[in-house]
Amino acid sequence: MYDKKDIKVELATSEELYQGAMAVRKQVFVKEQQIPSLQEFDGNDHCAAHVVAYIQKRHRILPIGTMRIRFFSDFVKFERMAVTKNFRKTGVSEDIMLYGMRYAAEKGYRQVYGMCKKELLPRWQQCGYQEIADAPHVQQNGMELIPIKLELAKAQQQITITSAPELLTALEGHWFENKTEPTHRKRTPLSGIMLKIKQLRNHSK
Image (cartoon, rainbow, N blue to C red; front, side):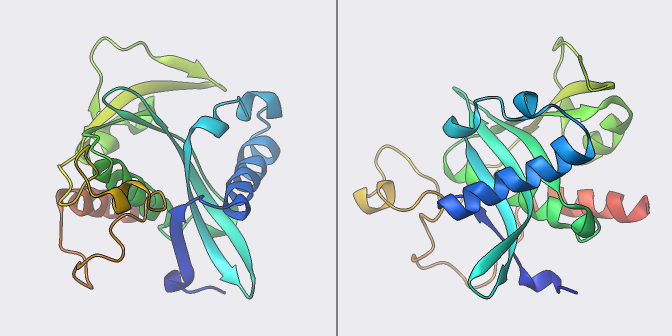
């Protein structure tokens, strides 16, 4: 049995973490949901960022969740969110989502695009998401999916064209780790959004 504090979330900046993300999606989407492998692994993985949740086991990692992020002109797209069966009631999906929001905001993005099941739209609206007007709905794997968006608050620290060179060459997603930041995170609009999601999730149990 693992404690919540044992779960780590970060970007796949190594081959081990990248393969871990792919393994989670294969387990959840291909094996459990019977989505064809060629449909799931669609060629976009090599030009996207991947958030990975994992547990360290000695010198190896146990991947338990992932989400893919793709980048467009003025928004990011969150997709391929998956959590392995034994960890779906731990709140790890919220941790992955919050990490993705913070990461996108630090890169300077202000909007997130996503899709939700039609029946879950009211819940996501309560968490700050809005249905995208005039965007077509999508029929996929027997579900009706609705395009939604979230406005991100400006990050307290973010990458810009005038950022210091050492930030622009730092490991992706780890830009501000060695800077003078407080040891505990202040409450932000992003954490408020995720608190709402957790409250709704707990209420529905």
